[in-house]
Image (cartoon, rainbow, N blue to C red; front, side, top):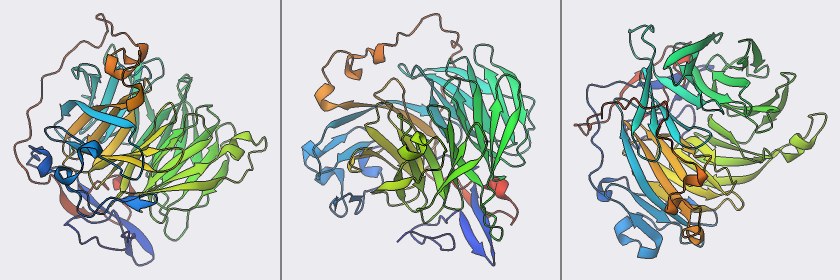
Length: 469
């Protein structure tokens, strides 16, 4: 049974992000700071076991341990393992490419449009890595920002041409970085509380942002103007409409947002009108992502599930007044679903969870293909490369990881990732991202890096410090 907003999860010392207090919800958080660092697992036996994990139409055996799984249903590395569902044919292979050490929680990961680079956000800094080599090529830091307290980078997003990187931080500001020059090109102000999610339109003209102030904004990259999309239907008593995640559709026509109040909302970009409110989750929605054809929308929630929403009628409707429906419910995670993404061929949906696992789902059937575990803390962020065959994960264990995945029947075909053609992308030796950073040291302590605290009643700006790892 999923712990609701007013419950206390007794499985560990961690608590839900929202608790009831009279007629109004408050955000319960854990500050993302510590004097100690978690030690990464030294072997697969040190990883969290998978217990009673549900698959559509069945379950994994109780107390599943990779050592007790048939060889054809598992794959193990030195500090990670993947277990494949016995209920469906195995068609996927997964391998770890790189482990990228950070100096704090990794809040977000995002690939460039060509798949060559990965950006990560943590406390005060944004890093850019070469995906093929795992080498850090760029570090972006706003030296003019206040040095008081923490300043976590909650979201990062490359412009489609790869020249710019947008970052969203807890100081309510969006920064647009010129990557080659490592300088801030523009800074957008307007949100009244912390910004937790960003997305570029496919033509690079617009940026969409979501904030704890319960608004979504659309920013024009050319003139810096913005349009506010407001949650006019938020419960006036609970006032819990803080925006956790935003996404803009491939055709640039729609904006979707997940919210604390359990709803997924969709707006028309041209008019700014709210045109759909999707109801079905039983707890806060923390991640949304469009399918590549724009006809489906994925959402992930604290109710431990993902949902697939068929919005094809909305996309096809000229009057933007269609009725979207939830057509698939993905059950398998044993704790909060914190991030979701879809592969660019539409075949796979991937989710990251507080249960420390990453799960691959077949987008056509809703069945789980495999469970991937390697992080020793919550998997906060996931992203799939537009070039195909590459997954990135970010975690509370102060690591980002880059993984390869391959459809087994395609493993030896020309152009597959195993042949390292990298989707036809050639890496240039004259790339402007050439300032290699100093390798970071490994964490030297196995303690969890967060201490619990309770935000004041009005502190929706602490919304995304939900990360109770």
